[in-house]
Length: 303
Ligand SMILES: Nc1nc2c(ncn2[C@@H]2O[C@H](COP(=O)(O)OP(=O)(O)O)[C@@H](O)[C@H]2O)c(=O)[nH]1
Ligand SMILES: [Mg+2]
Image 1 (cartoon, rainbow, N blue to C red):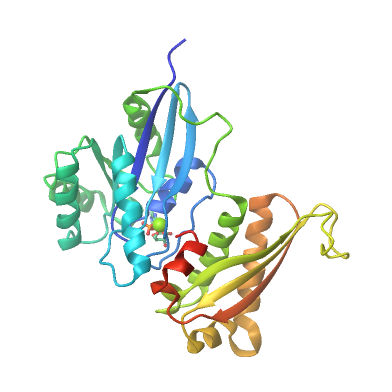
Image 2 (cartoon, rainbow, N blue to C red):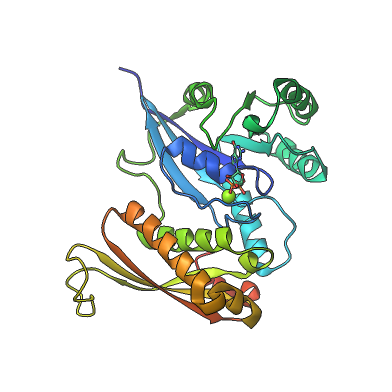
């Protein structure tokens, strides 16, 4: 019998590199919202996996970008905090993109941090082998990386070699989380994230950056307001979608409410899977100008 060991692992990188997709792949279950929109992830998301003697606590983080609102400043504070907590850093890059100033800035930060860092070249499904080798050569001198691993997070490509390295490098004594712990997110906050993901996936351009989701009601069976015509073991959820301006509200509603109906249906489907019980979801769109710069709002949204 070996000894229990662990590592806290920060997943960092530029927006859209595939950090949240990687977290979900490592967990074998969806925990983090993902989309083609940069800045999908706004807070730190913890996902815990136990493998043999090793417990890996992964911290998904927002992509590194320049703060434009109080919201973005808080997002970057989450990145810094995850880096400080980490025993090991996974730097995810989109191998199909070019190395630019963002990467150089991040390399500089990581050099100062001096934590063991893996370079994960993601989206290898989009590259030829020759181009991948070129990319490895371009990136590998940015930092003295502990490991360089090409992966395909979306399809789960090369996850076994990555796991072997992670298990090897989980060297801190003990397990900080009990074996049942999978995340520190509540069902409510996961529900809000999954609703926001649907908004991101179905709307375009600047709408998504100005959207937040607040769970207003969460009714379990037995509650006096629990709908009589609902399955007896379900959950009734009412959520508010905050938008920055009235134009965005109109886009979200769509003509004759088609858009919001579509968002509601696909979010409800996802929530059923997440909660493993019948779900009825109601959505309300509310204009709340400037919420991204209001600390009280950000507090209420737990960002
Ligand atoms: N082709 C391809 N797309 C990927 C892969 N991993 C992630 N993506 C896509 O890249 C986009 C950004 O992913 P996401 O995980 O939200 O990135 P994050 O901003 O770094 O968290 C999404 O559209 C993903 O589906 C991959 O291995 N291959
Ligand atoms: Mg993300």
